[in-house]
Length: 321
Image (cartoon, rainbow, N blue to C red):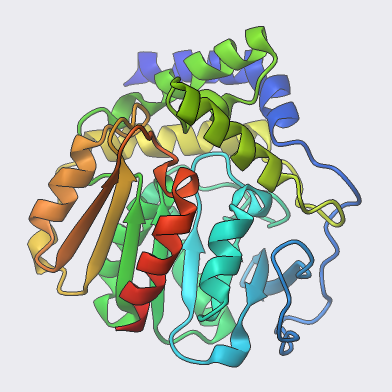
């Protein structure tokens, strides 16, 4: 464990420049509202233009974006992946969900434009998500957790099941899941590959190396740059290392009793996820009593982004029924 941490920290220090350039922060710094609560957004607003706002919970000010309030119903809370800031959410996923649902995404503590010291355990991240929900007055939500966000989602529902109506768990795995404790090694290896080839690490981490996978990765990366004004701040090196620690600990944690989770769950992934191996998705679907599983062919960790045209309608139908 200590050797893995120091090795991860070394690679993170060496590759911090690559990480920052991969998250390309174009345009002006994020414009945050001075008001702690968001006003109603205009109908038809998109992820490309929606303002970044803030809400304060104790000693932390969370940056967030919100769409589709006019739909009413249970809000969908988005929980992001390793090293992600708000601009790492695929606009096709967010806008697709917001066409029918109230959608909220926020930066974890100490990540992007959110203040505070970054959390280094999944449990702390779950605490922060619950604090954000309280500050926003969200009594109950649907959780959509991608990768690390799916781990945070599991921790939330196990702690406060009454706060969760449904869950979408994409590209993720359970505590103690196979290969999760070595995510740092995979991520840092692909950071090296990306640096040497002049590519974005997500091209390697999220997509297969087939012609279809490469093309889908390029299209995804282009979509992430559609927002040109008031982009989020990059993740800091400190926050990245903290998240690597959290993932290593989650991968070595004793498995939880997932059979107690009674909420409906949609589990999704690509058939060839090297970052959080796909068998973890199969494991989740088997252990969760009310789960359905979607696995996309010739797809990796970012299967839901590669197949967004198929995934979004299925996710909306799942949340609506």
